[in-house]
Image 1 (cartoon, rainbow, N blue to C red):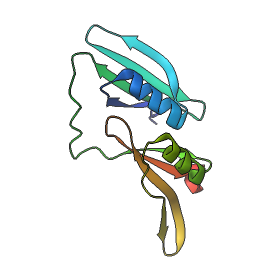
Image 2 (image 1 turned 90 degrees about the vertical axis):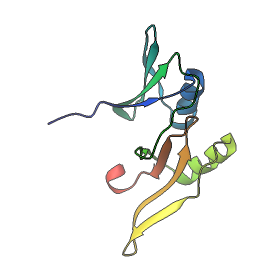
Image 3 (image 1 turned 180 degrees about the horizontal axis):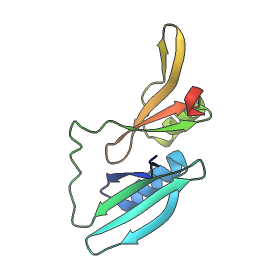
Length: 131
């Protein structure tokens, strides 16, 4: 059996990205490795052992082209309505809340937000298998 460890995204500005993920999702720097041409930062919180790896290429000055292959990452929260309001107040422009149903049964309640580098993030109400 394999254990999921982390996802890696490339970001343009270290401080901006670390600040966003800390303020938005409570992720803090668990480890930071600085190399000549790049820096790796591993973010985590007490909710899960899974980490988000930020890679900052030091010679990069232009935003990354995310293309059409990237989907999204997701975070589960205790109160999605309160988080939506907090994201609006922070100026992060969350999209509308969605009640995703099938045959009248609520499968998920969520909204999407975009991080400073254009990555899509789904913020979901803890529900069902996402407890």
